[in-house]
Amino acid sequence: MAQIKLQNVEDYYEIGEVLGSGHFGQVRAVLERASGVHWAGKFLKLRRSASSRLGLEKKSVETEVEILQSLQHANVMALRDVFESRAEVVLIVELISGGELFDFIAEKESLSEEEAIEFLKQILMGVGFMHTKNIAHFDLKPENIMLADKTIPHPHIKIIDFGLAHRFKQGEEYRSLSGTPQYISPEVINYEPLSEAADIWSIGVITYILLSGLSPFQGDNDEETLKNIVGMIYDFEENYFNQTSTMAKDFIEKLLVKDPIERMTADECLVHPWIKPLTRKQADNRSRSSINMKSFKKFNAKRKWKMSYNMVWACNRLFRLQLQCKSRSQEDPELRQCESDQEDTETKPASLIRRRLSSSS
Ligand code: ATP
Image (cartoon, rainbow, N blue to C red):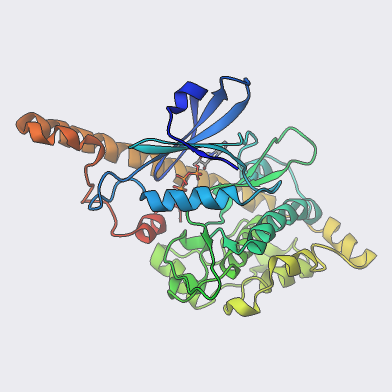
């Protein structure tokens, strides 16, 4: 189990290129000096003061670390080491070099349901394992489902980003408004007590998209999307689902159930006949049905475009913020400290949900 080190991360690891960015920092390739092994380093900025809204509260980083420490599973990103300084925490995690599952699929000419199920099964196994430990991920979405190595014949799924994950304690009532609009369940939006079933809803949404290239509840804006989710407004539009098997639709219908208690669990999903066919006929059905590749490619291209748009927008905000800070600090030397702790009052939403709600839908 990883012990938190107070030394400088660079004494142990050489820091390399940026692999990705999140709301609270960057993920970079790192090289372990002693062994020459490649890892990834997730650099999380810590909040400087209680009144600041920039950076993460130490408590939430500790939760992410504690959860990752207890999740050792082939389909969950492994934690190797943790370093802490006054300003940041660095998680050294396994390097996941195969990119996002959706990008890998979008590069293909065609994909049968049977092939798609091989990936879904792994997602369900990883999520099922978390649930046996009373941990819910609460942010399952295509960006957080990666592949260990896409060059091998049957790539392994790795679930990442446990920043919103929660471990339920016996008898505890936990509510949260965090998540990403397209993928969050009705009980999150209604601020009701949550359970692991919220992850199963998200898997239902991911499966729906994977098969059709359509997002089931997507509205013209976040508000409309949330309304559609709470109102359970979705259907299987024939134009998009004409290559989909009846069993696949049945599977989705058993995940996109409003009452979390009525939703299938991860274990039940794994024995649904679409995932684990009982008869030859059921198995043949899956291999004859395929995902709507043309529509899926369109969905993925749009998703990637939105992600890079959000990134450029965030960089521009940061740049303007730094300029503001610089000019103000020239006038007032006391403000020289403000660069990394300045609040973005104009665009900074009041809470994590609002930040996430407007981030990737
Ligand atoms: P968010 O703002 O979505 O909560 P975050 O700050 O928690 O993000 P992650 O989602 O964990 O950060 O990582 C950001 C990006 O970095 C990912 O989308 C992915 O592209 C890349 N990434 C994360 N972990 C790894 C890894 N272990 N190996 C390679 N790339 C990774």
